[in-house]
Amino acid sequence: MTRLGAAYSAGASSWAGGPALVYGRLAEVLVAFCPVPLAGRLVLDLGTGTGLASQAAGAVGAHLLAADLALGMLQHDRARRPAAVVADALCLPFADGAFDVVLAAFALNHLDDPSAGVREAGRVGRTLLASTYAADDDHPAKAAVEVALAEAGWKPPEWYPRLKASMAAWGTVEGATEAVERGGLRPLLVERHEVPFPELGPADMVAWRLGLAQCAGFVAALDSAARDRIVERAVEELGADPEPLVRRVIFLAAGR
Ligand SMILES: C[S@@+](CC[C@H](N)C(=O)[O-])C[C@H]1O[C@@H](n2cnc3c(N)ncnc32)[C@H](O)[C@@H]1O
Image 1 (spheres, rainbow, N blue to C red):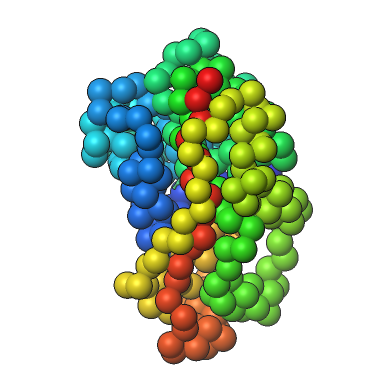
Image 2: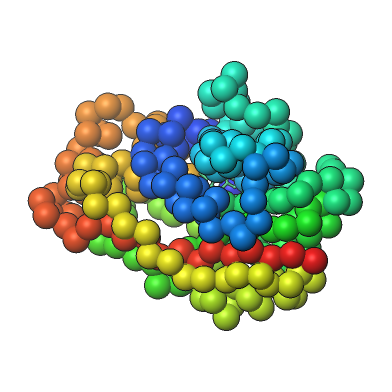
């Protein structure tokens, strides 16, 4: 498994305790964005993580199978989730046209070349529904948490800067459209949306950032006093009244 996959695999419970506050809503918005009805369709939740997109698609009547590079992610809350396989988005263990829809919530944006993932998704599914962050997605919580982590000795893993660069490359409507076309699919709908999270306060924002794969392992290895210090320091750096979190996301649907 890649180091990125290992980081996700080890970080499933941290993901569920923080980032899920944000990704659950984003999965619902992605599912609502789908231009074809999902009820009764066979959907592959690719890069499923802890299963938030499966939940959103299941709620509108989709039949699901899930896949992820990270076994730890698939094991999280296993009993309540669809059947799943460990698989790489670049080489999926499924026949051509096996799925009506491939649902890839913030998953193909982990590939160095997203168009290779688009091509493989288009091989196994008739429609691709995917999300990635807009290149201008930002919030002060990101910097505040990185300051607190750095003071505690955290260094970004080697895969993290590369990941950020490849995400930014298709983080516009034009870039995402081009990635879809290079992957051999026809863009149906590609839009940039702003998704607000007015209910999240500073502690939630810090929990969101601290549960992400680039730092969850570092944080989990600390004792609880050291973890509390990072949280306190990040909240202090962020301030008591930060701007509300709004995530800027590219949603796309593509077909053959
Ligand atoms: C940002 S998380 C998103 C998880 C979930 N889709 C959600 O929206 O909550 C990215 C997920 O993609 C998985 N992933 C990354 N690279 C992958 C690859 N090459 N093949 C399959 N899954 C991958 C990670 O293990 C992780 O679970």
